[in-house]
Length: 286
Length: 268
Image (cartoon, rainbow over all chains, first blue to last red; front, side, top):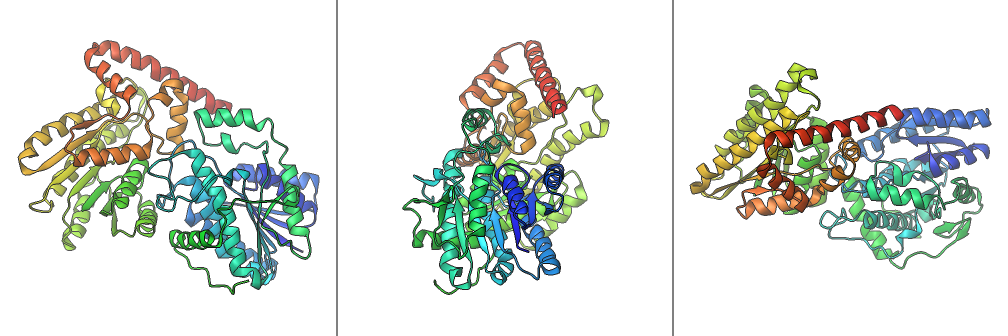
C-alpha cells in the first residue's frame, strides 16, 4: 500500500486530496493545526469510505519545532507500518496574512509556513522518500508570476506588503521543487508544483482581517470546488513512469516564471538550509 | 552596539529584536518564556549572523532579576541600549477583575521596569551614548475605563521617562517613550482589533514599521513617538478635552467592542 503525507489536510484542497487519495486506496497521513477539525475531517472521510486508511496528526507547522516533532512521529509510523517508505509528500499547508507577523524564530509567517515548513519537513522525511522513490508535491499558485525573491530582505521587513509576501512564497515553492529535482532526481525522487487555480477555500479568511478577508470573500465565490485541484495531485501520484514536468494545472504541464532558474533555486536552497539549521546531502546532479 | 530587550519573545519585542539584529547589533534578550527565547535566538543568529545571548527571567521577582544580572556580570557584558518592552494587561471592569492579576499589571509594567532600568543603567558602556526606550501606549494619553489600571500604568511610564530623560541628558543618554496604538502582535491581538471595527483598524500600527522608526528616533534623540497621524490627533484630543468626557467616550467604545467580541465568541 502506498503511503502519502498531506499537510493542511483538515480543510480545503488538502482535505479533498486526502479524501481522493484514500478513495484510491492510499494510506493517508494528514496533518492539521486544529485537533477538532482533524477529527471532523477523519470522520467525514471514514463515513464515506469505512475502509479508508486515514490518520490525522495535529501540528502547527509554522513553528519549526512542531515540524520536527511531527516528522519524528511520521518516521516512527512509517518504520513500524510501511517498511520505512513514503510514496508521496504533499506540502500543501499555507496561509495568507494581512499584517507582518512572525513565528517563534522571528520569521515572517507566510514565508515560514508556505515555504520553510515544507522545506524542513521534506528534509526530515527524505530517507523515507528515497526508499520509495517518492514524489514531493507543493501547492503553488499562478500568482508567483511577476514575483521575485527579495534576497536582501526575504522576510520583507523593510517594506511589508502581504500580497508580495504571498507571491514570493509561491515562487519559493517552484524554486524549491526545482532545487529538489536538481539534487535528487537521480536518486529517484521527483518534485512538482500544482497550480490549483482559483479555489473556493477559506485561506484568505483565516487570521486575516479587514481588506484582505473582504476581498477574498468576494473573490473565492468565483473559485472552483477544492475537489477539482485534488485530481491534479492524484494524477501526479498515479502516473507511471513519473511525469517529467515541474508545474501542473488540471493534470497538464504548464509554463512557469522565468525567475525559476538553477541559480535562484540553488540560492534559495542555501538560504533555507541556513534558516532551518539543516544541511541536505549533496545529491548527484541529474 | 549591545542591546538589551525585555519581553523579547513576544510580538513587539521580537520585532525589535529583528530590527536591531538587522542593524547588526548584538543582543541580550530576556522574557518569561524560555522556549520562545531559544527559538528566537536560533532564528536571529541564522538570519543575521549576530551574537545573541538569552536568559529567561521573571522581571517581577527580584531574585530572578539578580540571577540574570549575575550572568551578565560574569560575562562582563556592558550595554549601549535598553528596550523596555515587557508588559501586560488584563481587560475588564476593575471591580470584576482578579485582585492579584490587577496588582501584577503594576508589578510588571512599572515596578519591574524600574528595576531593570536601574540595573542596566549601572551597566552602561562607559563614555558612550546610551539609549533607553520605554514602551508605553496610546492608552497613556487618556483615562481608559475597562483598561483603567493598564492605561494608568502606561501613563506612569510616560511621565517617568520624560523626567528620567531630563536627569540623564547631561550624561549623553536619550530616553524615548513609544506610545503606539494597537498592533497585530498575536492572533488574539488581531481578533481584538477586528472586534473594535473601524477605529480598531484605523488606530492599528504596522509592527515592523513601529520597531524600525522607534529605534531610528531613539538614536536621533527624540522624546515621544506616537506612530500614525490619526493616533497623533487622538493624543492631542486627549490633552485638550476634559478628562471625564474622554473617559465617557472611551467607556462607550470599549463596551461596544467587548460586546461584539463576546458575540463572536458565542457565534463560533
